[in-house]
Picture 1 (tube, each protein chain N blue to C red):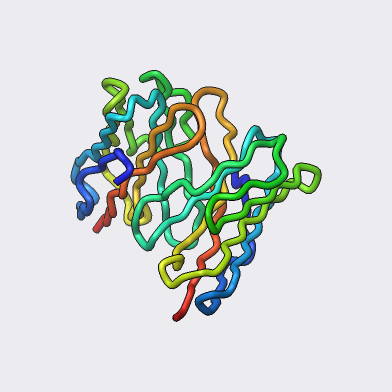
Picture 2: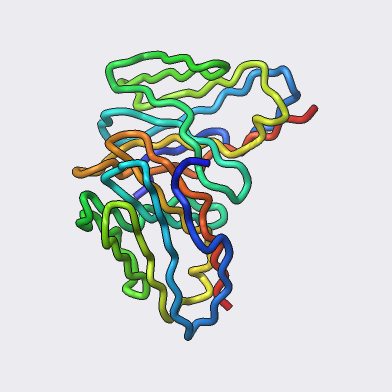
Length: 110
Length: 112
């Protein structure tokens, strides 16, 4: 256990659905991240929040909408996704250098 | 864009052998980190080496860094079947917090 918890662990959703991924950490970290991991591709950094403010958005389509209500929680709201969005979505947190990752949410878009 | 790139992409060895993985990166770094990922799980931090360090050890892990060549290597000595996983190098490029950029990783398979 890394101290970063992601829910749900698995999610199957239709292209017209709206769902949210949740990430929680109580490590006292001040930065949180969303990564996307697709087969045979490098981990893609999607969003970075530092002190609850979004500081990086790597050209992610608007069908992905992050939310960071406080330093311990991070959400990724999903709507009208495409099959190519199926992947492992990883949340991470840090306090400067080393990142602690959650176990990920395996998302399948049908 | 991709910052770190690991080599080889896949490595198969026998238990007891050493495994060496290499990483090349493109821009100046403050530090370079290595992570491990078991299949379909989250990444776990293994070791960090700062730009002013050349070598670092942690248990059976040895990391080297050559900033002039923009490369790093991870050596796992006396490998075990439990070392089977994917290994990634990561460099931090963010202006705020740590925004780690990862390569595609090396998939290590250790057979008993």
